[in-house]
Each structure stands twice: as C-alpha cells, then as structure tokens.
Image 1 (tube, rainbow, N blue to C red):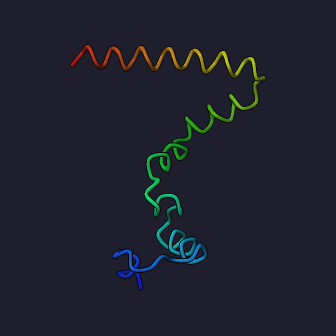
Image 2 (tube, one colour):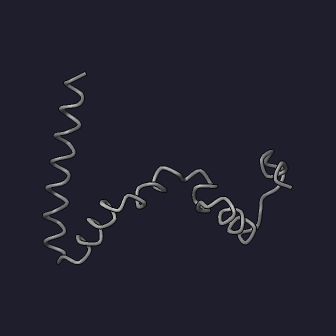
Length: 83
C-alpha cells in the first residue's frame, strides 16, 4: 500500500495520513512536503517569543514586526556583503 502511495498510484485518506504521521512522529503537513515550517515552532525560544507577541496590543505587535523586519533585512544585507 505504501509503495502505491509513493508511486502516486493512490492517495491515502485523511485518517490514514494522520495515522502515518503519528506512527512516524511527524505531521501530516510534513508528509505533504510542507516541512519548512515544521521545525520552526519546535524551537522553544521562537515559540515563546511568538506567544509573548500575541499577548501584546495590535499597535505593540505592529511595532515589534517593524523592528524585526528591519533587523532581518540588516542581517541579510550584512550576510550578502560579507560573502
């Protein structure tokens, strides 16, 4: 059955996909190839920051996002010019 899934000859049902994900200790999203964000929320520091930001007012959240965007852009620029 699994080899038929791998060869795209048939698709598992949602329930089967959930069971496979649980068996493999992963998520259905990961099985579907959506693995980039799968590890993101497993980082406790990132998760805690996101939870803290969510508790702030909309205005405070916007200020945090503006600051983060600027910092990320700065780090990317430094990385680009360093190489």
